[in-house]
Image (cartoon, rainbow, N blue to C red; front, side, top):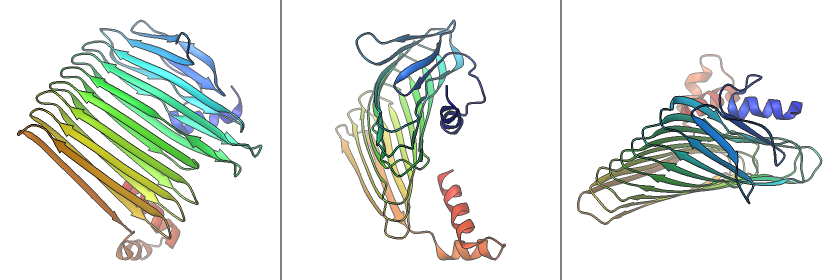
Length: 304
């Protein structure tokens, strides 16, 4: 593991020098560390790059780390990870990707993730992306499929921390009766960076519920696009919200959509896009902050 990987891991996965519990670390397209535990089995996928992760019955809150890092240009990393969580099991999964370039060549990481949660299973999934290095293009293309059986619950917290030139996210979910999905994404783009997020959620079972929230900051000449489609085919609840701050010549598009196929499907969508309020900046500047410091404080509060 090189020094750049260690720094990226600290940023995207909170690495403190070693992993505790089950883990798999991917560096420049290859696995450099893998460990299973009593309740978490991690194995290389047959015929494809990636992993099969099985979280067994009896798992009661164990943390599983599966981050990936790219430390130079010219690498196009594709990985397929399947997460199978047994009925009643509880776990936290820490993922994410850091990309560093310094030879002028572009680099990309594409993660194809599928989640299969059994009845009553509970998972918290944390994923961060960040980039650093020269002016070469750093790109990510995460694709996620989610299948929640009865009363399963998945919380997803995703963040793009900056330095990623192109990002294209696709998330699709199918919820059975009583299942719950809570998804929060936080995006920061600057320069001429571009980010697209598309969410499709099917609420198929009675009592299913989904909460989608996007908080975005677009600066300079960057571009962001958010779309969501929630379909309710049973008595269910769905809520989609996109809030964005735009400065300079940045652009944000938001297109939330709803489809009710049952009389008791309660679906709501919201979208709000605006600039940082001048009175907020003025108030912070009277406390001694510079213009840049005031803007940064407002952005950090907005994203939290």
